[in-house]
Image (cartoon, rainbow, N blue to C red; front, side, top):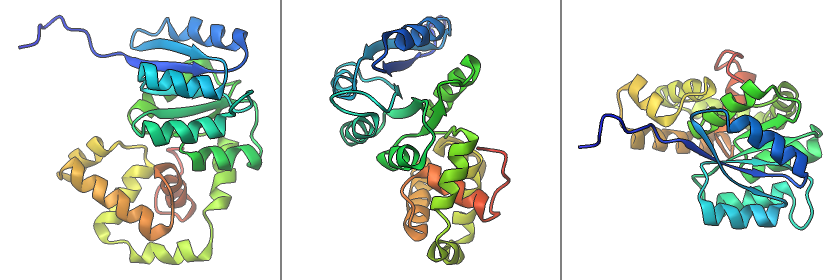
Length: 223
């Protein structure tokens, strides 16, 4: 039996940015958070991938414009090698040429570097729980990417239970939370999420949440 004094597991964070002062600033703040543990840093995407494989972080803070391997390519490589790792894009850019490829590569969240420290910590905890955090302008741009007529019509193909799951996904609920809410197993929830993505022609939970908000299937207060 585990001792009653065992501390909760900390969320392991890797910082990937080519500017040393940015890495130092992020580490200085995150080290003050008792539930976060900065396990390493990397100066570019290639090193970020290497450090991810070595250190097994839970969450990676990823810059986009870096030498050797950019953030989009690094995100894609990390998600292919370690699907359970959550990537939070932390950048200064919000144009479509950066936003859409990053999300398609598998980023859980997309934030700008002017994000408040307390909001960044909240985003890390949310990403660890499988919840998306998007800058409002990023959310708006992504919504424009999921408005094809085929997808709108496809919503009619969702079962009543899949519709319930989609609404909960849009609220930022994790699979465990959805399973508890609907009194089913996490495996069942995972199957529903997979069916939803397939029917709507979407790639991940973030796009599903945006789709639900765009089409009035969930309130616009989760992202």
